[in-house]
Image (tube, rainbow, N blue to C red):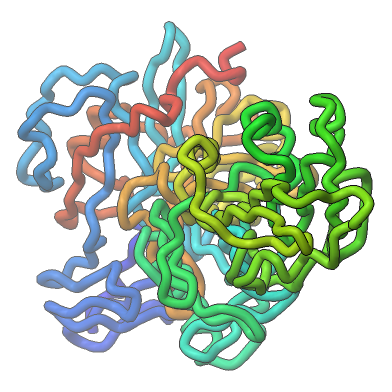
Length: 514
């Protein structure tokens, strides 16, 4: 009976007699599932496979390069029989990411890549791994003023609850998706559906969701949302009050009254302080809703997918009446939404009834200006994960020292080479924009959990001080020659990718060098 072929490559004293596999199969210990993999097959995660009795990582390890040659987008094999060409490599031009690098599971072994380099004359170390995240979620920002669903409403994927609607932000609806309770706290189907949804969104793919009591949406990082089958085009320039203030001078002289319809704060120009500063004549308009401050009205209608994120299709429905002592026949009224996508022009007749007329060209110019100031409607997907003790053990024998070093700005944390925001407070809770990461950065294990890359860069002295695995520090050239230290000579691949120019270079001169 053959010995268990491990992903760790550690000496036999770390392995037990229980780590034996049936003849012709390899037992993979890269995650808690412990698949037995036949030759030519892959495990349940599709990340590891048995190739001729060797356990290999299927996906390539992504190496970022600041300047990428035209012929370097190809896959390059690691092989014990085929040494790296020793082409001169500037240490500060190459960065090893966690994408495809393998994990530290079952968490007693060092990270697969602990790479030394030199930056600005300072010896550096980057610890590279893929984390298995059960405690993780996605925060999704959807640029639209359409009503998607009530706050706290369930969000469903394929009928399973996978998250909820959270507090709206300026011009955007927000969703919180995934999380440990949906991954592990519900049924197997809920956990699997949540994992698949998170994997697709993290890897910049489209996902269809439904919101209880609300809309059906299709979201994809970096793309416009589709709400009830309609692709959104514009993110509002501001609330109704803000739009009044921004464009008040441009409306002055063209209209006698302007109403900017908004689900949250509807603006009325002549009552608004901007209109008063322009000495505009009061129009006598009387609005539905709750008056907040002069020219600012709340709750003029219910939330919806109509004008300004309300449920109205007729803008006149939010006008209660006109004060006959103040209004006058011939009064010119413009009603518009916060994006300018809806706009109508009215003139009061002798009975003070608004009669719709053709939009004057000069007024249309201002409406077009509102649209010009609306940014394109996009979906933003942020991955949020907690790097717990198990992942930290791949960096140091004393995990709390890594946590403290990060909080002291001695360690730069990246995910696939993309800058990560580390939340204040206890633990290492990181958040990263998936659009700034390499494509297909995320994987899964069927426990269920998300697999995501993470890198910790610091000075060599600081790595030694926090109890790092110094015996496993290798130069970049050594990493290029042999791949992950625990591959045991098994062939794997790496791939060059150009670093995103909008991302700070992970091995720049951050505060950790100060």
